[in-house]
Image (cartoon, rainbow, N blue to C red; front, side, top):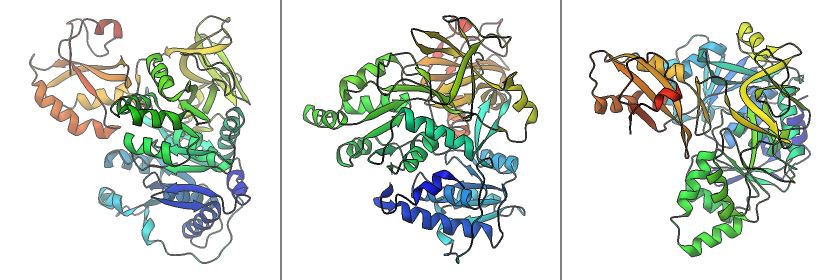
Length: 495
């Protein structure tokens, strides 16, 4: 039986989710997800791992659909509302999804796939109340979730985690961060990433706490919730803290003091998914009275390393291994390095994912002897804590908490009729962590940059998420294809 859902029955009429100005109890969540499960089963005994894709806002409906899919024995495949249709179609085709659930606001976007013979498409608003029926007993070792993450091979890979993996991820954080039933957490993060799905929603529901959804990022609404909704926890990416600091500075001094007074009453504030600039940490500490807790994780393993809930949190460090997680640093031959020397973070534990969907070769290559998962991130262990030094590949850019494949963007840029070749890298940025920079080789030695900017805004943002792009107008003649950060010093950046 899925422990996360089984535990909900003991929380009864406690508020599980606040969404769209309404409160929903654990009992309602169980009832409504039971209805979704029976609808998906259509009289069958078990979905037996069928992939069920869904596109809904960050809301109560998201939790209902996720739990309904799991209770019917299916694998949940959450889609991103910022992705263009082609990216959504790729995931539907790659997972061979048999059902697509959606809310009506996405009907126009998704309508081209409605005629797919193998795909059953259901608008959530049109699902009738199902009759009583029996749900399957789903084993914990069954696959539960497929989340897509970009990699150095170009096209995103589907990361498959089991219910057992998810339970291990939840319990490690519940222990380390001392979750309890009185907690109330604000969720403003995308719900197709581990950060929002596991660290916030699933941890809250595991512990009988309340998850308060905001459908989109709005600094004024976030501060309003901080002051009026009894929030005790907040988790976000560094970019969000950067924007909240900027917005707080716009308030009158009296309003600033009122916000800060409420923030000081929070139990915990966490930053993750990208490196946290020390300047942001210090400014937020001045505003809130909290030293943000930095942690480290990936789609493939949830969280693995965390600064302590009780104890010193050192700026620039990510802390120690979470309960039940084994960590080691290894060289290029997968041999452990001595303390104080840099090495690749390698992880082993029940939290580590099962496989990349449909990619046995890539799955095998991501592990080394002894079952250690190779993260691709380089760190050093010193003074009793781990410190991230960077990735062992420049092909992955972390911007605003997202992992973005430079190779994907290069492939798009090369489709432009005036571009002969290009190289894409990430440049350090205090707001985004990294911004995307492209070195371009024009076909005829000239390029209309204003026209190209318009083209980029129309085409590239939908590929992942809207963000800041920068163009490099001059390219050294000896640079073709990839452009290293060292070489970028010689380039002119045009915003």
